[in-house]
Amino acid sequence: MYNVLEKLRAAAPLTDKERAIHEQGLVSVLRQIHDDLDAAVAEAYGWPADLSDEEILERLVALNAERAREERAGLIRWLRPEYQNPAGAVQSGFEAGSQAAEAATTSREEKLAWPKSLAEQARAVRAALVARQGVVTAEQLAKTFKAARVDRVAELLQTLVSLGQAREVEEGKFVV
Image (cartoon, rainbow, N blue to C red; front, side):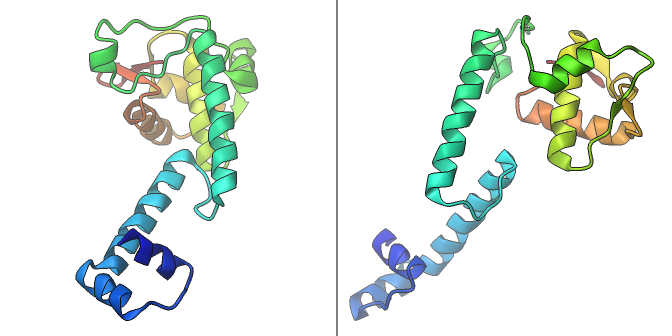
């Protein structure tokens, strides 16, 4: 089936035997499922869906290096925190890049600009959460930014929780 799928992707003509496999194996359905899955994975990473295999590999290698740096600095991104980190230990000593450092050093009066894109907003909320080094609500975190809506910050915090990049310790209260 996958040989037929590759021929379909290459727009190569199918033999009679391959056409039979295509029909019996529902290879077009398989192709659509793979395409949908590829698009969902790209969206989860915040990447364009039309990257080449080489570009995907380059980005994954860079992401792996970034995660290794984070782990050396003390940040562990638990896949299943309730199982891997049942005590809920919070990591310390994490340097979350320039935006987190900026958030940590920003005075209470000086607010950060609210990013325009969704990906930048998620990174900014995570960086601000890391900089707080403790339990925080969406309302408190929204005050870190100029023109950030509380409901948007709350939604991004819930997204970070679902991705294992934040933890909700009580309803509406979050930590890294």
